Image (tube, rainbow, N blue to C red; front, top):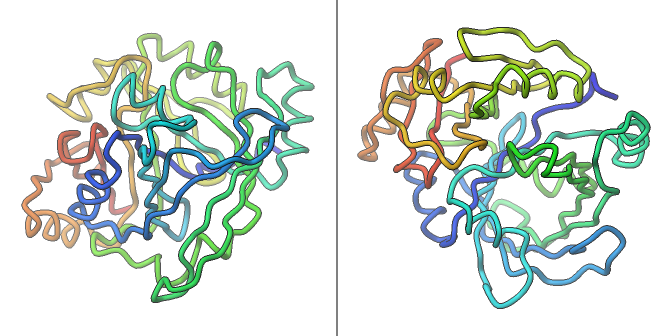
Length: 291
């Protein structure tokens, strides 16, 4: 099972969904139309309307979710996230079978709950004139043990509804979700914890920074000092937390030009990448890499 785990999507949670949509459109992401969530508040509970919705940027590999409140008066698992801070919160890893994954992980004593059914109506077709049900089965980890993010495994039941061909072309040239950067005080201990979870080795990348390579994507775990080398001067949410998101683009020069055209400063970063400060991306530093 572990060799099939992929970095599926990252969720940036904000209070004002429209503000998030506008910010990420300015960064050059081709976003889906607004979709409202429904789901089971707890495992086995009936599916009910949630007071949250999203806009997504779909890639050849993985996707980005901009999620926010749409009705603060009703249940939403986004409420406690934005109460803590606005920025990257959700880190989802894709698996082929939620049930098989749950059996394997619970058998190893990993604190993860049984799958919840979640769904939403998504616009379908190039003109977005049709609605189709997008369905998922999510398994959430115990936050007392994995406080670094709203960590979950996801099984997609309707991949064709999400990964529509016309959604995969982005003005900024992004083709894949590549990295999640977790900022923590004790990076070595956390890296070891995640390596055991995924059944792979954590590689020391630099002082205070480790990388875990998955079937698709990377999990980077860094101390505040190590993260400051990647994003000098960038504000970091309350620790521990996902501080940044990395994307693969077709052409880094074209991405830089698009950002400049839209009035967004792109700064030179490590590993040949460029990055955008959190104030332009609702609290998360955004990295673009050419490979």
